Image (cartoon, rainbow, N blue to C red; front, side, top):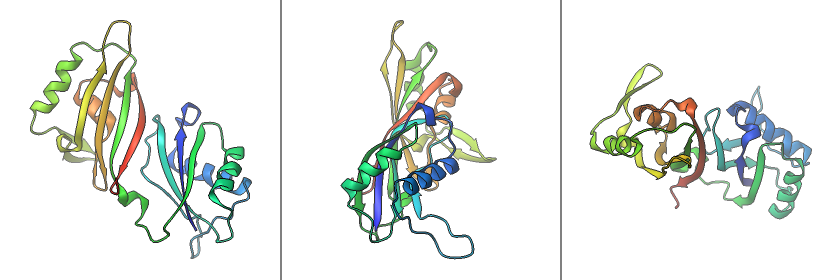
Length: 210
């Protein structure tokens, strides 16, 4: 039985690593009495897939994890109630559904991700900076010592609001495909904005069936 859980990763979990998030989910399913399937081999691991890794320091309202369970697991409605009782601080379960066990790996179904980026400091000429991004044919960046072009990975970018008494917010839709993933912090650097002066929240994952 393949179960898909949609959840939010909120402020208390902001600095929880990708690996520790998996561990938190394994503990949550165990405490809820839900029988997780394990991989075969010398080092069995719980069969779980996250749609897209969320960088450390980000929050999200749209995370998705697939978990394989024994066939005698309860109905999804009962499963959701059980999981909510044991969800750790910083995890907010939104939905639990059963999906086709033969569906493609979750990571390969993600096309794009949308982010809301709140700037903690006022940035001058922000609208002009955004406009200049789209005037460029390339945005050469480097990741793990390898050069790449950020520009084609930016699908949408615009300023939400601006004013002396309001937070400045940026909406970003970035490619999230394997080998073609745009990172919000790299977009901020291209805008001459220090990533540490922003709060980044992922608000939507776009899958190929959408």
